[in-house]
Image 1 (cartoon, rainbow, N blue to C red):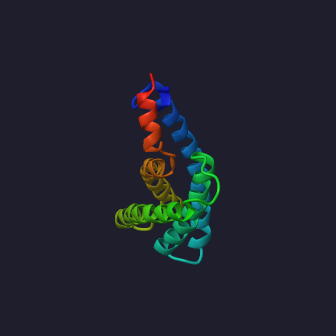
Image 2: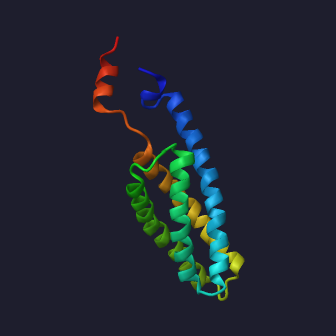
Length: 155
C-alpha cells in the first residue's frame, strides 16, 4: 500500500496542503474576477443584486477552473454534477456574503465601495475553505472497492 493511500500519513497531508495552495491560488484569481465583476455591476445595480450576479458568474467560471487546474479533472464526465455542486455552494456563499453586507450596512452609515469590497472578499475567503473540502470530496478520484480490496490483500 502506497503512502498516499494511508489516511493521516505525511504524504497524504502534503498532498492535501499542496492542493489547498493551488486551490487558493486559483480561487484568488476568481476572487479578483468576482471583485471586478462586482465593481462593474455595482455601477448599475445596488449592492445585493451586484453581489449575487457577480457570485453566479464567477462561481461558474471558478468551478471549471478548479476542475481542471486544482483537481485535474479532464473531459466532460461529471461536469454537470460539479457545476450543480458549485452552484449549491454558491447558495452558502451568497448567504454569507449577503449577511456580511447586511452587517456592514447596519453598522456603517454609508459604507464606501472599498469597505463593501473588503467585507465581500473576506467573506469569500472563508467560504472558499468550505468549497475546497466539499469539492475535494466530490472531485478527487476515489479508488474502486475492488482496488482497495486488492491493495489490502497484497503482501
